Length: 493
Image 1 (spheres, rainbow, N blue to C red):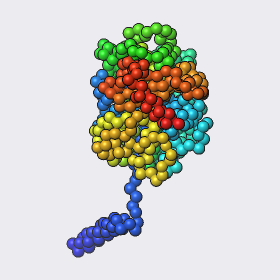
Image 2 (image 1 turned 180 degrees about the vertical axis):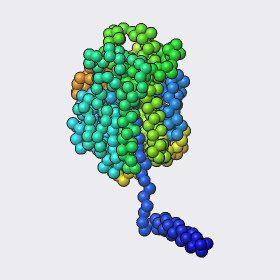
Image 3 (image 1 turned 180 degrees about the horizontal axis):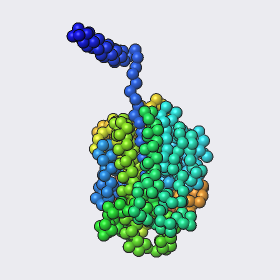
Image 4 (image 1 turned 90 degrees about the vertical axis):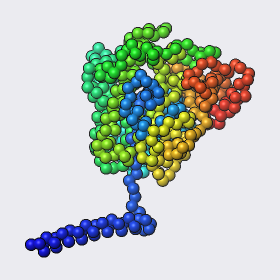
């Protein structure tokens, strides 16, 4: 009996040794270059948030509750000076997803699709689809209407990528969605579960897609719609804030000294809601309600991001997934008397941008000026892609992997005037080009037909994130403005 046991043990040991020897041999063969064992490429979780300011604790805001985004920042690199190309959804997203500037793809407003001008362009997710990734979309990644969807970008069906007006997308209270209309109350607080509103549904669907993808290498794009108006979120997120404490978030409505009228709008986006006055200053109590709703909506989205990351960990993907978090543009919350986006000011074009994951430095804050068009080339660099399409952005990979502190000298943003053209027209009449450098924000308002300059703005920004005084009329800044004007001409083409 002992002999049989000994033989059995010896046989098992031989099998174990044989398997270990096979493994060791494969490793040695790989090292000798005869057979390469490829390491699985990193996955990408691509998170878009609509209208989210850098009003997060990881950006220094002590009012907001954003624990999950802050944890993401602790694990990666937070870009403090990131800027969108256009402070309106369709052109911003089209530019980011193609890696091309708005004047290149001819998309400046809510109307055109980028493939009208560039039918063969390879979008960011399409690039990964063509390189063997499962490329999937849940929520708002391109602009909302069905016309702006791009099936070529994805390798599977999209979910919740078109906004509906019925119950659960924007509203839950019957008085807000019945009869069906797009703009009822500007804010809504109801004691419902997270999945009663659109972003909870998006999160739940994204988790289902993660399970469906299985072990495939993936590019999963998840787009959250809050804190876009209307500011609607479950009551538990409103309960995180006391309205009295939000008084410190009320903004100064005074405009920058010497700024031209063309720089502004009538807060048209907000004025369309039924509980908002058509003209004049928004009453303070309503401003506080709006601020309460904005922060509640932001915390609601933060919680959904936390659930996604928890599922990544549960499925064993977390350590091999690059997570990119960004917003398509900023949002005025009463500063300069403005509500909404569609300006060239800092509050409208500055956005949060965080990279986290394998090969990325942990807990770093970069003060380098960067742009959303830099996301595309950066991801290609991080995933060791085999080819590089021709893009207008710059890879930020050196900032993610080393002590490099600077990537580029400027960010170029632009916006259409009049405001109505941004919504209703494909061809703009006037364009404001804004160049943000470490020292200045320089803006030229141009007649699009002949590119003649109509107005100029120059703001000192080196020690302030708010425009204070337009210096364009002061002769001592003439050389600075001429130099920056030349940069605009060179870059926008």
